[in-house]
Amino acid sequence: ETASLFPKAARLRNLTYSSPLYVDVTKRVVKRGHDCEEVTETQEFTKVFIGKVPIMLRSSYCCLYQTSEKDLTELGECPFDQGGYFIINGSEKVLIAQEKMSTNHVYVFKKRQPNKYAFVAEVRSMAESQNRPPSGMFVRMLSTTSAKGGSSGQYIRATLPYIRTEIPIVVVFRALGFVADKDILEHICYEFSDIQMMDLLRPSLEEAFVIQNQQVALDYIGKRGSTVGVTRDKRIRYAKEILQREMLPHVGTGEYCETKKAYYFGYIIHRLLLCVLGRRPEDDRDHYANKRLDLAGPLLGGLFRMLFRKLTRDVRSYVQKCVDNGKDVNLQFAIKAKSITSGLKYSLATGNWGQANAAGTRAGVSQVLNRLTFASTLSHLRRLNSPIGREGKLAKPRQLHNSHWGMMCPAETPEGQACGLVKNLALMVYI
Image 1 (cartoon, rainbow, N blue to C red):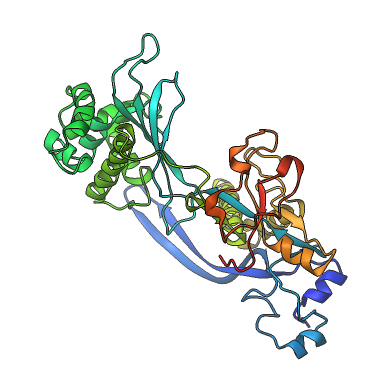
Image 2: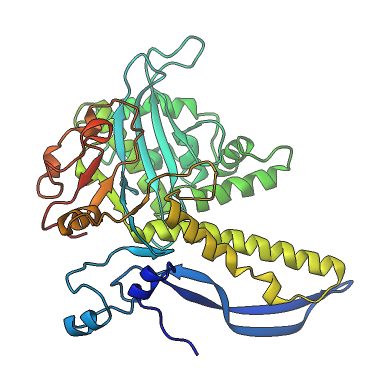
């Protein structure tokens, strides 16, 4: 007979405080004949176990959620303990909040000369609904004194995801279906009386003069994609797909988002030109309005996404094997619940976020909770980390910024190489 596991037992017996995860699986068998496809059988499997997810103490899925002080004492828990950590193999682990640049926000930076570009506008775009990694988009203005042999003049180019070279901005507008110069300018400078801004756009319009309709523009983009040696229709479809799915996904990935996307794209260029004309200062990377914190939720979410992808790949290869050998598909063998359980456990136990020894793995995301004093525990639970290399002796990100007022503690930060990169939340801050 099973009893529910309480945190005290998990600590004492070196267990992991976690909860099982069940999904519903539908199995469809499709027989392919000479001319038709028919579904021969469908099976519904309810509550298939796919792995265990560690539970944060005092969260809404925890046994101690909204328990009275008297009951807590009986369960062997300190009524003053805050929770907010995980128990992995009996040791208490905290996920340190990770600082990152805000997504879905236009930043304009001036490049230090001599450089190929004078200004860069960038957006890390991430749809609110999905948890997929953000796709970056850059719009750059070439500097007037470009490198030797390069095209000089104030051309504006955009970098699209999965496209090898930079695309002139007017080509992107035409690919989105805005062909007339007037329409394009309407999306970028909002008043035609603004002569200075119109002048800055003249070279870009002249550069893309040869491409005058949507199909040619899409083909121009598709040619520079990852597809090699396919027909023109395929290239155009590929370019359309990229503009729809990968470019600025937070505006929308649906069928008819071209107008919205063109306006947002125009806004990016508008911001870039405002900066070029000196009507607006360049953005401050260290201002706290431009920062966001990834707490335990997004961190575990991203990790789970990766592990679940791996699980579906494994299931797919297993089913493929079964089909090739003509065997029956057995769900018990197909779904290896171990992979999600051990993956989450590994990352929380070691602090290496991501697969074992893979690229793009961050270290030290999960740490053993500091129980030296009560105050040190609280401090550890409210710690933040900026994932900048500790070696780079950069002064700017480490300095106390005016915008930290009321949000970061001005005094509590380690000495030495992590100074100013590891911060703590101020007393009353709540995310």
